[in-house]
Image 1 (spheres, rainbow, N blue to C red):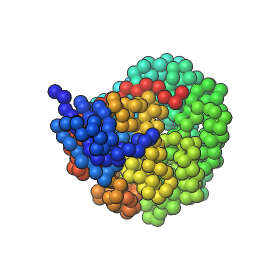
Image 2: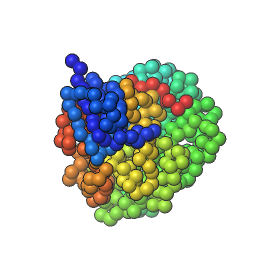
Image 3: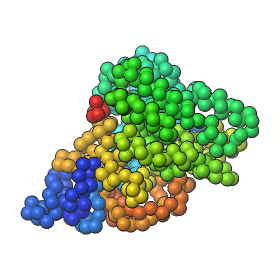
Image 4: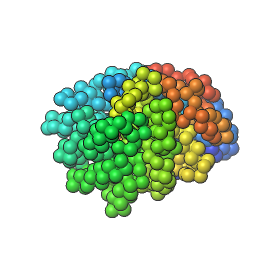
Length: 466
C-alpha cells in the first residue's frame, strides 16, 4: 500500500538551491518538489501533511566518521549503535558511516562481520562502514577488492598509534596502489606516530602528565609532515586521498598545495577543531581530559584557517569523529598519565546545530552548510543522490529545522550515552524539529518516534569525485 507524506510551506535548502517548495514523499522516497502555492503542489494529496511554514527543509545529515562501540585503550566507546544512531537522529543526522576494525593477524572479513553483528537490527538511522586496515599483507590486499564490491569502498590507514593501528610507508603505498586499482578511497590519519611516541615518553619522564600535554606532544608540524608524506605516497601510487580530522593551519596548507596541482586530495575537519581549542585541554582538575582526541585540539588561531579552508573548498567535509568515553571511569584511566586517556569526543548529536551556528555567525552560507554536512560526504563516499539531497528519487531523509529556536547544549539534555558534553553551556540558534528517515518520522515535533532496527545498511559505490 502506497503511503504519501506532504511537507508544505518550508524553505527547501540543498547544496545547490534554496526555494520555497512543497515536497511529496511516496514509499520512503522523494516523489516530487513543486513551488509552494503552484497548481502542481496544490493538486497533491497525502496521508499525512506536515506544515513547515517558517522552517528550513533540509536533507538529513551524513556523518561519515563515527566510532560506535570502538575498543580503545582497554575500554570501549560508550555509545552503542543503538544509542549512537538515536542521538544522531535527534541531531538531524540520518546516515552514519562507521569504522569496522581489522585486528592485526586477522582478516578484513572477520573484522567487518564483527561490525555487521554490532549494527544489524540496532540502528535507528541508515549506516555504512569503512574498513580500518591494521595489517596490510597479500591476503588483506586481495580482500580489499571483495569489500569494494560489497559496498565497503573506503579504507582507513594510520600513520599514528604504533603497535595498534600503525602502518609504515611501504604498507600505506601498497594499500594505495590497491585502492587506485579497485576504486577504493584511502582515508588517512596523518600524524607522525613514531616521533610522537618519543615526545610522549620524554614528557612523561619530565613529570608532564596533565591532559594539556597530550596536545603539546602531538605537534602541528608532525600533522603537517604526515599529511605531506601521505600526499606524496598517494601521488606515487596514483591514488586519491582523503585526510581525516584535519586540525591545523599547516596541514590545510599541504592539502591546498596538492589541490592547486590538481591532485585528487580531500580533507575533512570536525566541529571540535572549529569551536574548541587548547584552552579546553588546559581546564583544571583533570577536566581537560574530556577534550583529549587525536589529532588534538589546537590553539585558537588555527580556527580561522579551518573556516577559510571550508569556504575555499580546500576542506570539503565536516564529520564528527564521534568516539565518546565517559569522564568517570573511562577518561579517568589517564589520571597521572595523559597517554592513558582514551582518545575521543562525543559530537554526533551536535554537528548540524553547530554548523548552523556557523551560518548565523557568518562563517559559511546556508547552502555551504548543507554541502559540507550532507551532499559532499554522500558524494565522497558513493551514496549520492540517494543520500545528501532532496530530489525526486532520493531517500526521504529530511529534517525540518527551526532556524530561530534557541537552545543551550548540555549533557543534561543530550541523548548520547556519555556523561559530559564537549560544548556544555554553549548557546546556539537553530534546532532540529522533525526528522524523517526514508519517509518515517524518527523525531516528530521534538518527540522521539524511531526504533532500533529501522536503519539499514547502505551499499556504497566508489567515490563520486573521481
